Image (tube, rainbow, N blue to C red; front, side):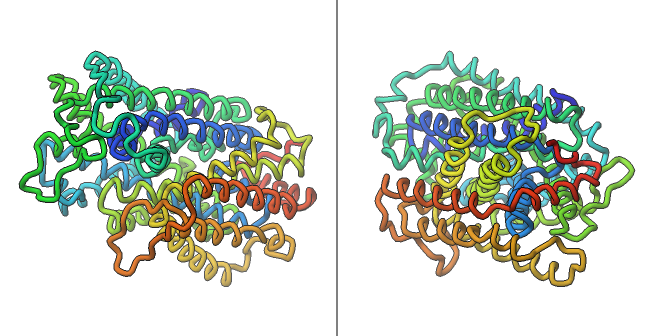
Length: 548
């Protein structure tokens, strides 16, 4: 695919179900100050995107986010960040199918239970069907996929822009200040909680998709960095404007108890029809309340098209990340098998099956968002570490896009990533930790019987010595902090202690992040071993030789 296809591969993931629900959930946590949350998250993601732009141009490999840490720190760290990358990718398609069911329940209530907030049995079955369609389309090959995705993308961009323009004419300025609670009813904690808990960062996720498909992009050294930066810039502008018009166009009658109470009361029988419609399809409901029935219909159609495009491209990404992990010999070599169209067929099918697993314990859009966000940002955290390592290991390497002030920006990007993980809340982090432990066990068992396993000598263990301290340390800080995230229905689920007060927790995260960052820089692989790893993989068709 060319430059436009690369832009759309990232944009298709950025403009997905996040815009359909993010504005509502963010407003429920932060009120009108959710606009600030979108700006904070946008800046954070742009910083991370610039890091990926340099890495992607430098080494345009399929499944790049899973492989950069492997080049810089060896197989131990590579296995970990590779699994984080695969975990987040495989869980996104189920989220997109949930979004479709929730919006479609307006026409067919049997798909989604608005009282419990979860999909029904019928809705779950249709989620499986949608995921099967994502997989089938991917078997047609990357060229056909790029054409399909580009066609869908014009619609996915046009509809949010149309909603912004039309809803801007239904302006209620009092919604920003006169509603009970004022502009920031949740205070600073509400603003920061909305960054993750409101689905804001989740909405921004996906800029790295061009990185994952780097091996299939024309002239990747030139097109890849430009595509990543262009995609995140478009998404940031659209999302901030969507939040503004959502707040302004909301019927004040639905806000009599404030922005933090735009939910149905405990007794389902007394649930307001207005609030029920808002929670099942926020933007379509706001359009309907503004007497824009035709726009509401278009938005409900888009609620199928937009998540479909995102689920489609993430199914592609999952297969490529699995392919990359197979190339690194972390996963069985079956994951590297491709068909006549170059599609990694086993990795694609396995991703479909694994995605079905996430449909069962997380039966709603909102319940899965925080987990995927945490896994995604944990994956992103490996990129600034790899960038800092590469600058020391191969400073003379060809960099089509070179991030200015990398010695400052790389540690800042790592701090930003850890802020986002922390804000996802302890209820998310302990579940994410459980997934990581299960993944380590499965991969460890495979490596015991893998006679061609990657090199795991003393140097690799030293290069990854910071990793267990990093993962356990983040968990402990989250346990002591104030951010719990979504309440857990799991019996005997652990809870955070609220020991560290607001603002001090951010200072602790920042200092902790800097300690880990410079520890990783000190123990990174020596230049010769790093070049040996890249040289070994340059024999693969998707990896260029060391560009030095």
